[in-house]
Length: 253
View: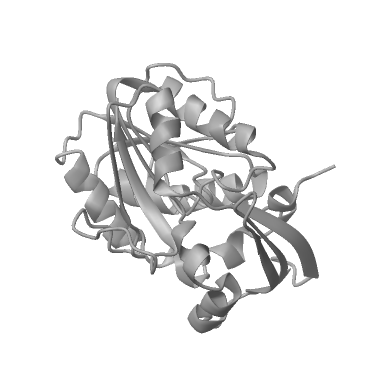
């Protein structure tokens, strides 16, 4: 039986690119460039690359990028977009929990959740971080965003989503946040790329900073910084607060 995230991304690539949360690509890549000191000699792994928006933008700027995703549909869209731009990017279908790479990459990115937070249990989410760690070289860096549990502890997730709602192709209803597991359960209504209306029962894991720090230290990351994640405007000066729906994590081995 397919999980909700597999069903969501099975036929949603075109409409995914039109969602408001995909609009921050340029600014996010500007930040990534600063984090790697604009070095074109490094190799980047884009985990949960989706339709390839970060991979393609980075490749346009001259970086060597490999994009991986679980969804064949999303990868096909990524390949089409790269071809339109005459970019030679490797896009491969892999489960982020079990990547075939070892000590190959200088930077791994996992943005807009990129698989992490979506898994059915905490062990599976941890396997994604393990896989990223294995793929990195000795002094490699992992940059990812994840849902910030400080937010729902102080606010209603449902109210936030409604307040931030913009015209798009999906709506989220009936949110309930479980304080014992830090999971948000909701119903997602959307139309796929063929216009078929669908409803999915979703659940996503929120994390507090201390959990993320402990998980990454377990994987021998030596330096871990956590900030607020602003769409298209990542910045090391943005201290994480209860007002941030997502957190930005930068971990160095």
